[in-house]
Image (cartoon, rainbow, N blue to C red):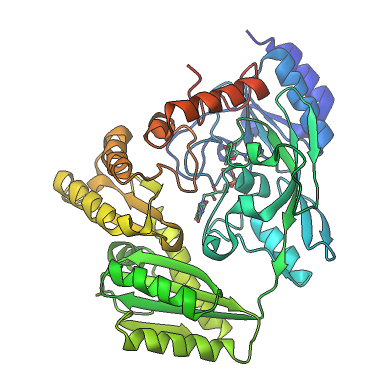
Length: 465
Ligand SMILES: Cc1cc2nc3c(=O)[nH]c(=O)nc-3n(C[C@H](O)[C@H](O)[C@H](O)COP(=O)(O)OP(=O)(O)OC[C@H]3O[C@@H](n4cnc5c(N)ncnc54)[C@H](O)[C@@H]3O)c2cc1C
């Protein structure tokens, strides 16, 4: 039993009154993530403003055996940051400084609570490019992006968050600070410890600071929105563009007809670039270094794709405004699906050639059971990552029933139950569909070693019993 009075006093002593929210001062933003699947009221919200304060918070919570859940922007989709009643939430809101943009080493050092958009803008202002990009960019944080190993729209070219980090500073459950804020690309001196914390969803430590890797700012951006006759043609188009664009292909985002329709019905500000009559749409982006010729070459490549029957119709963005409008269609998919009620969302990955039969199978099975169900399928096809969302026809369908349907199909194609959103609470029971018993045993061993009292985000990711 935690001695709450003593711990409360010690935490207020460590952070000052402004650093600890309690009672009615704790607003609903701390109760739920963006999936709204689960809700919990934290006993306290800790708002440390430095690594030393994070360390002090964890040292105290460790001493008193108090469970802690780290929170960033709360845009997560698997409830990992949602408190269990009585837990303490540790928010990174006040760890919000970009500390350095290092032009020589092409790095940016940011505290964990800095938003992704702030990182992108700081990189841009310094003449660099930070390529991670997801629809929640204005609210999600560096710490959240790292802890979920976020992916998004440009993984095809630049990799996931894991690939964009050189060093991390992390505070362990007992308050020990691990300063790994290196700026080296190569560092084979023993285990690469940062990878333990990337994608760990706050279960192994609290990330306080990161050295992120910047890329040269693209000098040209060409975007097109294409309609396709079928998914197989989409794969052929992907492979064709990878070769024909000479490594400049940076996004290949597929939108099934059903998800396109959700946008047209649910986000009226979006003007459809193509009529809604085709089975598939793909947003294609190329980032290059030759503004004089890249756009022209991009259009030539797409002309050839048209001539070869790899696309049925295509709209090319010819100005910055048009490019933005095409990207807005893709971003609007994420916005439109959030309007489904209930909102049952899946994020799975699999070999690219399994994606279409998988989606067809799942759509058929959902349709057979809930004929009025609205379904949307879209994804980062270049990475074998599908998002599937449904409202189960508005029925209060137990999540587990829909999960079983989707994850059985995922297991059948040897896919993963989480491509980029993580496991959290939502998918913990399905981890074994993707990970072997031995892998899960090793995860438990790591958890016990780094957090022997089990105070960090207990119950998320891996079941400890
Ligand atoms: C419109 C929209 C589009 C999205 N698109 C994508 C997408 O394309 N790809 C994608 O991968 N995700 C996407 N997401 C999901 C989400 O934005 C990401 O998971 C994001 O990385 C979460 O960041 P956050 O700061 O909001 O984290 P939170 O939701 O606050 O937390 C997520 C997890 O990280 C942990 N955590 C947070 N900060 C820390 C820290 N400093 N140290 C340790 N643990 C921490 C939390 O405990 C929790 O487990 C989307 C979400 C929305 C709403």
